[in-house]
Image (tube, rainbow, N blue to C red; front, side, top):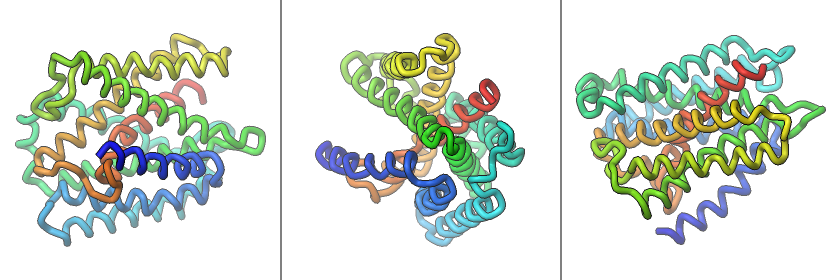
Length: 285
């Protein structure tokens, strides 16, 4: 399993880096559509794991919405005089509100599941609120690149990914070596408070790196934004775990050997990206 994970990661990382740094924002947005369509198909199994019609209906709905977004709001026309298109701002804001609600559902699980576990409509809505704001946030950050700073948007996307990877890695090793107190055993029995603390501590390495290359940044604000983004990523992971537990599914898919499905790889990012983008727009734009 570990060997498969490493091989898959080594294959994916160059593609991810090429996409966020060198693919123009407009093409990048279209490249994301099939990836998120696969994630939507996987979410469809949370809605009804035994009904392919339901799964494909949700997939087509999400893919259609993403295509409409790309057509109506081209990535190279999203920013004007430092302001993001109002529709994108609205979607990102709705995404942040969803993650506040989702966190409440996680905290109150399994009691909260009584409200939504038998409702395909609610689970479908939750899936759209998880995937679409993440998609929009990715495009919004990526499209910040310009002729003056062609890699700026890619750097922002990469920083969010680094925070998530650092948090996940730190949580894994701290949890393995020090974990004693369960974080949310009803949602994800393997996660511990010590793992969460270790993950948050590890993200400070990203802060050190940013301050080294960009010392003009305000340290306190950078630390807060990094920690909030990392905490959001943790709840993105827990949220998917909650939906998988109710659906009695171990992995969202099998498309990535050793990693499971696309959702299993982007679950933390689905929360981290809208939260980071919202804060970035509020603080720096």
